[in-house]
Image (cartoon, rainbow, N blue to C red; front, side, top):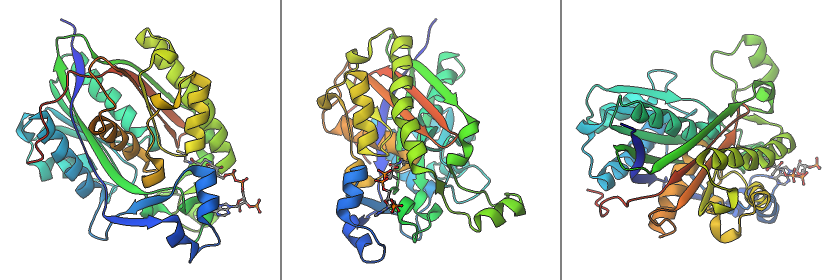
Length: 334
Ligand code: COA
């Protein structure tokens, strides 16, 4: 029997501290006008010292489980997309598993930078479609504020912290995830990266630090082209035309990248969800945060065809089309 994977619940967590562009004007040679006109970002959230990728992911996961009406002990697998976890190992997923009080099921992290959540969701989908698992938790959580050089105006203004999560459940009814497109081009590895703490000493000397490095114009061009192309492929795989997408939820890196890609796909602004203005780029957390806000704002109705697409370090990309609904049970954060 064919198994379908549906999103049964969603949740998000944003740190309380808001840092507006104007707050950065005082300490960097930048302006609200420059940042907003180039990126669409007005403010971002920054994690408190005690907050980590696992603590924020745990909070988002609790919300998603409560909404789905799923007890942590019912989970068969936990997948976390992150590249800013507090430990090189164990996986952030193991820390979240313990925090939830889940069974000793499989738990692993996915590192595909800003494409990570859609990669993780694709993996969860495969475990359900194969019949191996029925209930999978997929989390995206990032503390990019700790990967940034706060004296580098070209990068630090772009990113923020946060977490989002969904519960995927098996269903015999057709629907849910209908296509997955994954891609990676390691020849672009130098365009966007963070040196690891295990980097060769020669690499560390070259960079002199462990902060995010980026070739902005190269990444911009790659992102515009790839968001549109990967979405087209995902739509084709799902048997629909790009213009038949009801809601487009792209990775929230830059409002100009999003609108250029939406235009290339023939999607009007009403079909595009953006919240980059309030959170900046939260990497692997951006799509589940956006998805949960779109659902709560009533932007998703049963039967809607939703396209998710992430692009980022790798260079990597991941896109999928899913059919929304039937809706999760009424929201109960307890
Ligand atoms: N405030 C003011 N000036 C800044 C600045 C800031 N925060 N950051 C950079 N600048 C300056 C640069 O120093 C440069 O000055 P120069 O021309 O004197 O050398 C100038 O602004 C560059 O301006 P411009 O060429 O107009 O910038 P841009 O339109 O290429 O925009 C980015 C720069 C970074 C916003 C853009 O390239 C981008 O969004 N790239 C993709 C980044 C991204 O999304 N990464 C994550 C993907 S997952």
